[in-house]
Image (cartoon, rainbow, N blue to C red; front, side):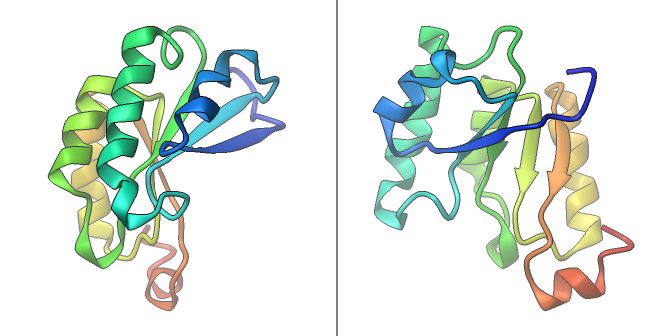
Length: 133
């Protein structure tokens, strides 16, 4: 992508039928959500849906896409770090970013898989650390 996207579409990874429609969607950039758009009881199924979408060619290829992982005070889950390595999204989105050192460490890991990192500042602590983030 050579210019900023005009349209970004959030797709909850728990909805496989939504993921399957991605190739036909006219949005400039797709954000596949594993975080707030997915119920806690559906997190494992959502990760499997992303794996299936990569394997089937629905995600990946030349079309840039973002993967929004679970974040916040509990950090990114090991299963999602593994998924980033498998899926190789263009950008990994870290929601509820608060700790600059954790963001730097994760960004380095994501970069090893060819992904850039975007942070979402959603808490008072994140706002207080915004310049460092």
